[in-house]
Length: 385
Image (tube, rainbow, N blue to C red; front, side, top):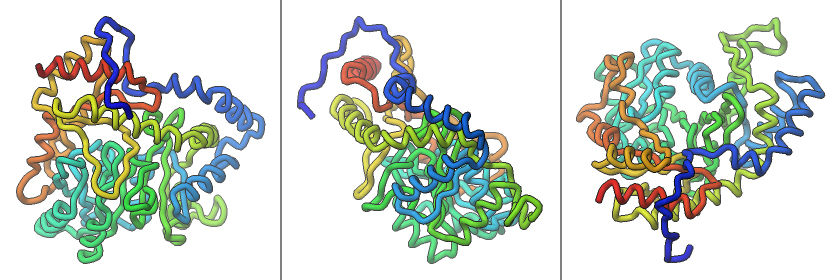
């Protein structure tokens, strides 16, 4: 990367979006249209061959034995908890600085989320936080069964240290990789870092379809069988063989076809995201707290999130210059009405509350130009001058 950054054109008014799916479509639009037309021709709209092929390619890419595609990231979380047998009286340790779906899935299976704090530098659950959550769960009279670390903004959590606590305490690590599919930790890909992993293919994700979609990853053949049964009404060997309570949670074939075409360019897009993150670091270092990668981790930079006590001024300045931004997450999950009664780790959630007041996510996608990034950085610097 050159040491000199592009000079921002402060007269430019072209809007800068958080995510530019139109630019991606300009690159692979014809391939996607052909892929959809093939599904229309063969007519296997549910459990078609593209679903099987997507699962195979994802398993190869992530180095895991079993991938189970499903209808959404939230369904993936619910299916995983159901397959693990988590239910009433059980506790699941979750971070509060994340989207509500993580805790929502816990409640929907009848269990109780126990909220813990995160690390300011990586935004992720730590082993110390997990241990504190387990203590709080037992103090509340609950059985700790699982922990769901969330790989926030694209970087995996520290799964080695989390696994050490999990093994010692007898809880299952269930990775929420809704934002990190494609990233790695100590040479291993997301999907192969925990006994069970869920991801999302929501359109704005680094690997996204044209609707809702998700998947689960596991090395465990028996668990994979249970997940496939749950995905389709709890059916066993045929539709009239109901072996467990299930859902309607299948990924439709058209979405799988779209994902196959996007997967073909995914590695290239991930490299572009890293280049853009490096450029942001060069442009913004010293102005705001920039995100940091932990040792051994890579990120797919689902979001580029910076911290500043002047966050609200930055948001106003960006908007005035036609630049999109997003606040993740100004109200942590534990502060929302449905979750206020849930247990929290002793010591409070101080980092979570600080992040809620300081975090702002800037435009991030593989087709963001250096000139656009210079405009973003100039607006950020003006806001805090």
